[in-house]
Amino acid sequence: MEFRRKDLLGVADLEPEEIQLILDTAASFKEISTRPIKKVPTLRGKTVVTMFYEPSTRTRMSFEIAAKRLSADTLNLTVSASSAVKGETLADTAHNLEAMAPDVLVIRHYASGAPHYLARRLKCGVVNAGDGLHEHPTQALLDLLTVWLEKRKNDKEPVRETLTGLKVAIVGDIAHSRVARSDIQAFTKMGSQVTVAGPATMLPPYLETLGAKVTTSLVEAVRDADVIMMLRLQLERMGQMFMSTIREYSQFFGLAPRHLNLAKDDVIIMHPGPLNRGVEISPEVADGPHSLILEQVANGVAVRMAVLYFLIGGEKG
Image 1 (cartoon, rainbow, N blue to C red):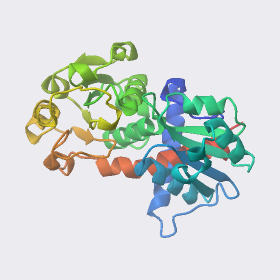
Image 2: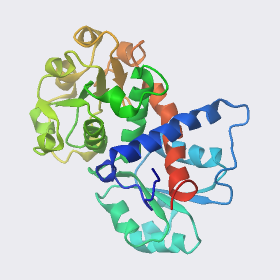
Image 3: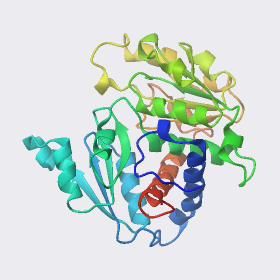
Image 4: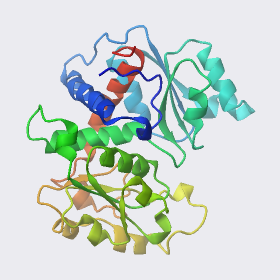
């Protein structure tokens, strides 16, 4: 199968076969990061521009590292030092950047739909690095890759065969999490059973339409789980009180060592970061033997290498 898309805007757009193709390629790219010289000439002469209207560490840096590992040139637009603070619109900023002939624009924006808005107007490829409360597709892809590589029986077992039937629990501030929305769609597309848990005020009404089971009990969510994904409280997005106190939230929805006894013996603990230790996850769990949080970060570079490869230099077209 060939990847013929100009943009990567969401998991909802991807077919299972496209997900398999991206993850197969990402798995092969992981080896590059273990070399003494961590670079291949695949995208030499190509240019990747990153535009982040919200703070980011892992996503922004992993996109830039991914581009450089493939020998692409990178340019990071610092929004606080750009003409956006003078009133320049998003579209005008993007059109001015496109006039400089980049190959891919990677954007994170506080407004849901901003990457889709640009993709309809720009000739270069657009990658959604997180838009409002909508989606974060490359995070979902790296989460799939992490679970697949950990759970597969051999290196030839396809993603869907590995993930079908796995019980995945996603716990925390679901209402404000684009990661949750993308992960629910990604894991259900590949055959997993997804349960989401959190306070009733943090569980939006559309979750069941995405194929997820909904509960307000952490214990119920993690019972017999193969994968537990913890999410932080996104206090910066809360325009009103969604809980009484952080201490009470941690008491009822913070993942502690005792909860792991309810899950499968080989349960995987994941978190998209940044972690709030002692709130949604205890340090013992975050740093424990079941945690693959740092593997997620490493796999993020490989997934973003694969995405850039297909959009501007690989088997497209």
